[in-house]
Every structure is written in C-alpha cells, then in structure tokens.
Image (cartoon, rainbow, N blue to C red; front, side):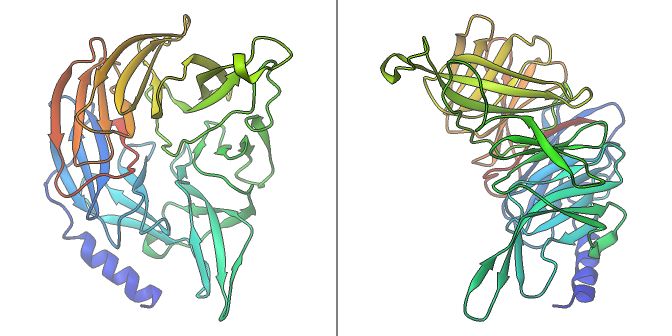
Length: 366
C-alpha cells in the first residue's frame, strides 16, 4: 500500500474509532492502557470505571504510551514496534502517524522508545533499522528520529542522529534533552544529537558493588515528574568482594526531569522478581514493586513492610497523584486497583478486548 493510501485509510478508520462520545473532563484524573486486539482504553481514576475505548489502526504491540503535555493526545508505539501514532483523547481520532522505516528495503523497530518534548511539539524514538537485501539482512546503526507532532498521518523525521546501541526506553527532560536507557543512561541534546553518560549503570564505579542488571521497559510518566527504573546488583561486605558473602540488592534510579538530578539507591535485598516499581507520591520513603506479588518497602531501613498475593502476574504499576491508590496493569484484560496504605484490593476494572500484554499504563490529569 502506498503512503498516500495508508494515510487515507488511517483517516477513514479514525473517524469510526470512538466507543464513547464526549471529551475528557478538566481536572479529572485518568489512566490510559492499551490491549489486544488493538485498543486504547481510558479509565476514570475517580470512579475507577472505563470512560472510553479507542480502536487503533494497524496491529498491536507493544502498546507503549506517552501522554502529551497538554493531556489531549496519547502517543503510542505500536504495529509490532514499527510505527508511532497520535490519538486525540476526546474524539479517538488518529491525528498523527509515522512509519519508522525510512526506505522500502528497510525494517525498523523501536524497543519501547517513545517520548514527547516538554512543549508537545516533537516526538522522539530511537530506531533499530535493518536493511533487507535480496540474500541477507544487514543490521544498521541505531538512530534517533525526531518528528513534528503536527506532521499529520504521513509524518517524516525532521532530524535524525546517531544513537547508542542496545537502548530501550527514553524520556524528555524539561530542558528538552533526552534521557535514553541502555548499557548506561545517556543524556542527549535533541537539537544536536550530542550525548554523554548521565547515570553509569554497566560502567558504574560504586564501591563494594558488582555490575548491575537492568530489565525495565515501561517509560511511565510519574506524578512526581520523574523517570525511574529498577536494578539488581551484588553488594559486598569488603574490598575482597567475596561472592559467597555478597547480598544481592534491589535498587532504583530516579531522575528528576526538572533538575536532571539522579538518585541511585538500594531499597531491599532481592527475594523475588519485579517488573516495575515506584516511589510513593506522598511518601518518598515507600517503594512499591509488582510482578507475582504486590509489595511495599521501607527504603531507609531496606525492609519489606507489606506484601499482597495477586490472582495473576501484573507487569505495570501506577499511582494516582495523591498516592492513595495503586493501579496494576499488563498481562490480562483487568486493571487491579489497590489501597496504597493497606494493599487491600479495591476493584478489578475490566477493559474491552483481550489482554494488555506489556502495555505501559499512564496516569494523567486533564
């Protein structure tokens, strides 16, 4: 299909995508999630009920969401990691689309890499291209692609820059720079493409620590306006670094997107695996984690406070802005709501369609 025909099809499909009429309400708090077959669902966090479901173009996966600064659009990395979409949250219309591949003989995929500039005028993605030759595939160097958010349904990059290899998610800081997660966390100038190491990970020099391990692909926009991820690392008792006496610790990297300052801190010994975790918006000494259980930790004392069993695994943990409720998304097609103080379940919210898989849930206030 030609790009012109694709744009026309997107525009036609978008006008029919709304499952609920009417705009979102100013001042209300919402949770956005994606799921199979290819939906974007908006949940009212005040009533914990589904407000609307938008049908997205093309195919699902991974469904990584970023909400625009004015809270009017959801941008989604989708179509098997190969396209970016912008959806108007009031009308459910698709108002932006960019195919990441730049040539007919190229396949390009972004690994959870999507971010929006603080003024809402640009969208960013680190792309991993492969040239499709007649008899072979040729891996190309990764690149950052920059688009104008007013680029329409056939948007093209306005700038491209060489990017580090083996990167995943990224987030835009208030000064317009980009934090990019890879072997280390890099900070890139989105105008020039120059970058350096903002937070060492693989190459950190923390005394009495082994090399950290990071598996984190959910670039959530937290109420605290921070960018965070979890790590595990061995902590040794002395300079001998005896593995037999080491304690494997869970910790977090928390980057303030206003100041750019980063905190790297352990919060507990590893006793189980978490896919996502976050600091409480109302008490920065409380850390929560989720995968097969929902847990709460005292960061200062590196101690488990509470744990709640779950009916199944959840990948993605979100807070409301007050820090009073936790929303667990991912895997199946229900969002579980928990009281943040007691870890008691409050409600299951069923979203239309199939499972959410590895969606990045985003909480926002219109």
